[in-house]
Length: 262
Image (cartoon, rainbow, N blue to C red):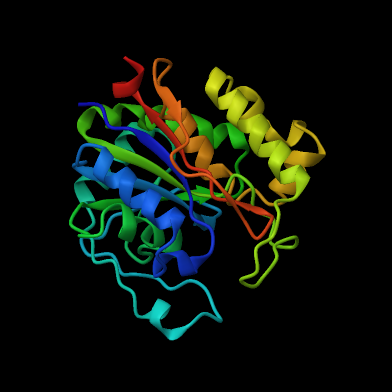
């Protein structure tokens, strides 16, 4: 059975330990799809000048943030790694230079959502880094080359945020209306995704001021391109999580699923 490909807006790290509309929707995603044999995760928080694949049998949980309550630092996500899947990814990406990494682990872009999607932490997870030196098309093409993993029972997951502007983010717990530019860009992206028109989203820097305000840095946007690349033409596109946090961080999830598209 072909697995979905899913992009999740992970937002504030506190979502890892909170119960809210976003975390409930993440749990519903996990219960609504077949159990994968493995997960390939692309997180906004493993962003460096190389393409690496996590190849450890027992990856550590990384608390890559500061200034949060102690309970957040006590969270672990003890899912196993999968060195064989890491090697398979390297084969699919050949002759691209891909390193097998034994030092990283699960950063919060991965574990903060997976602990809700698959709380038992018993499905092998392999992270792929985002090469910060490469253009957007490069990341989309990696997704295309990993697409066949979906037919091998592997869930391809990107974790970032379609809109992620921390300079405009309203810190604190009071409700804030989304900025108009954030709403407009999310609406534009949803329309293009539903049409299957990926190239404008790959070349997102050409989409104007709304796109530049929504993705002032590429790290949180690029995981979406891996998931888009892994999609099939007949996939149904749904948005199982919606909302904008702090006015400037989109929590939108994008799911490509052939079971609903057939």
